[in-house]
Length: 248
Image (cartoon, rainbow, N blue to C red; front, side, top):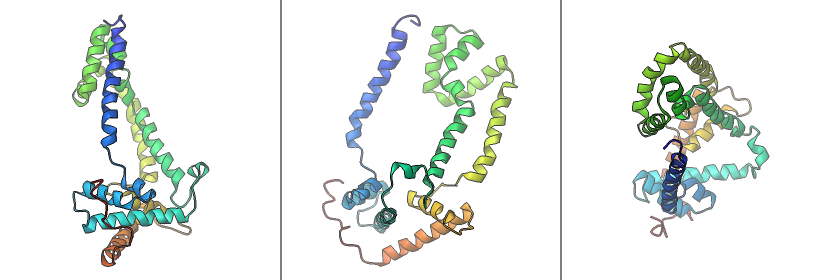
């Protein structure tokens, strides 16, 4: 089988079959509330938020989240239209800095050695362990389906052939990532997209001396105050509950 066309045609065809299954379900996915608000489809956004929060469409949580998204978009529009060049410059929201942070995560992952197991496992099994090509492919397929289990098993098997020194390279690289993460990465656990935007705006505002931690605390405080103000004022016209049944 490894020397026949089935050995490479079947994996490719099987993946395409699964991809077709994904395409079938795409029409049933809802748009994000933020995208809907960007298109001024506030009622649709409210319905989606209600489904995400598992709350009635007229609940305070849904209303507050919707109005914060609308106000955030209004602030972004007030800054003017953003072009592709602006993506590579640091404005109020530090767009380019945030892109680099996202790229950094992917780079760290690659340098950490994850692809040795993810992509080259058949080669490792065949050349380092003496498995036949057929058995190497079978074990690689099992590893893909049972990632956590076989990942732990391969740790012990590779050590017998390559020795413990092989892991020093990845250990040093992972240790080197820690200062970068500590100095440049922002803790985003539990933060909404609007809160993350506010953190970067506060941190990099002109004359600001805030740390990221202080900016995060201030962003949460500001948005909490805004939520209280939203809950205390009458609902804006044009952000009602009409015509929601069609998208719920």
